[in-house]
Image 1 (cartoon, rainbow, N blue to C red):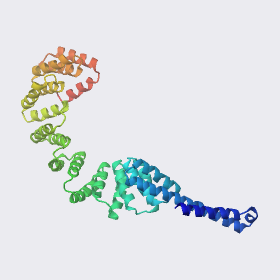
Image 2: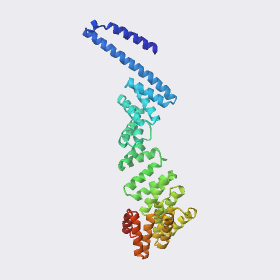
Image 3: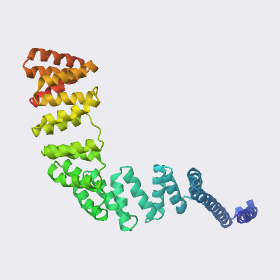
Image 4: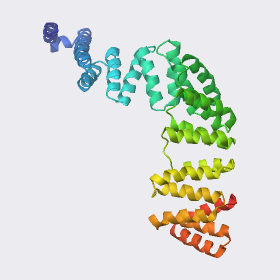
Length: 366
């Protein structure tokens, strides 16, 4: 390579001497000089691009990604049409999580070779990963046409789902399911689509299938329980609330309230209380559990028991305005209206947002 470069340089210097000022007055010779100088510069740039490309590939093979990235960048700076360097720059950028650089490189590749499958596949994935749904669909469909890569029906289906185009999403989810019947997210997203369209009963078999395929998804179980309670099918909802908790779902006030709602709807409110009391034996100062027990008693119209447990919350946290407010509500339900209103007003003074809770409870007749 050095010999070739030296030879080219010597010829170039000789040509410069020939192009003296007198000869440069000749228009034809002047044009020839400019052409030769331009060709030499182009040749030099190509040679430099090739050198840096070779270095970049060597560093890539050695998994020295940053060094490879720098060399490949220099390669395309010397020759912006070096499609191989651009392609490799895109691949190395992916390894470095430089997704913006990767997208620029692969887009440049396509401007040179419009059907480059490496660029198309990676642009489809990049846009999918970064939630650019429309270009993700376009590149995935192009990849399908060129028979490059696989799993594109799922990419297209989820992209349509995220854009709330459920008609197209259903079409491609069906195709994706035929390609990979073990992908639990396909029936899950179908279930979510039906929920988004308020068709809760239609979502049921898809939730069941998704959970059967992946029993580790506790969030799916809890969502399914909520859907079942909305239908309502509280008996089955209770099964999935309990399953979610057993599998590790993080229990909070909302969980206990929803579980209690379903037990109460089944005429079994005491079961919700018994469940929480067992846990309280091990965690007697757990404010979430204490609130859950109090709320369940309140819903069962056992107001004194509810007051007792909200009082326990105030023992640990005297500034808990919500517990104070609910004690006031319970006293009003017991018939001690004046005392109850005074407590509610004190709680609202501590936290004005409790006015909204007052309105909610009133609209539900609680």
